[in-house]
View (cartoon, rainbow, N blue to C red):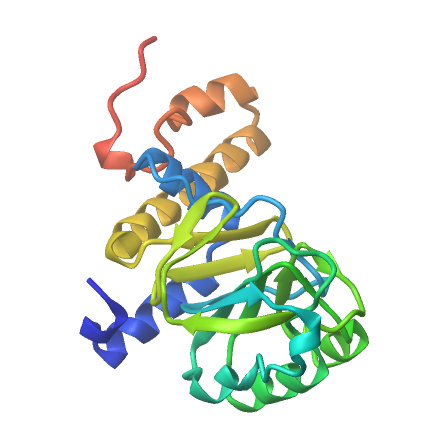
Length: 235
């Protein structure tokens, strides 16, 4: 499955459901399917923001500084609304690949956020626009003469996890993860069950059960399954 095979209604439904789920429950759902999807070291740069959208991948490569300006960011004109830009700069911390201009254009184009395997600058602008930006950090030094655009819409690797164009990206205060698009419906269904299980456990504890009893009652060992699918707990 690819995003091109999804109808607009299906795309909108996936985005709506992801927007209501946190990365913790989605991560548990992915774990239940044996999918390693957490992007270690990619963190929220603007407190209170979150993003969910389809990956538009951007791959950079280093250049010789003597070669001059490389126009490394014009790809933004090609990014469709509803996307999350996934910018791979090999984790480089001394050359930014996102800043003021890109943030303004992304907001105008209804881009839903940016994830950078590297660093960004102009964080004051990013914060003022409340733009969802996730990266390894922040630094002021430009990538203009240090990196160049190698390709877009290709598979990229971030923190040992492969991200394909069109995969679902979700980021919040706990970090970022990728959901393979062909697993998205099942992952979302399981994440919804995880959140319900946890709400049920909290409710049972508030009514007087111990945490151990509540976890056993609601099968915390199988939180990604709907209640009717869980096997009975041993006494």
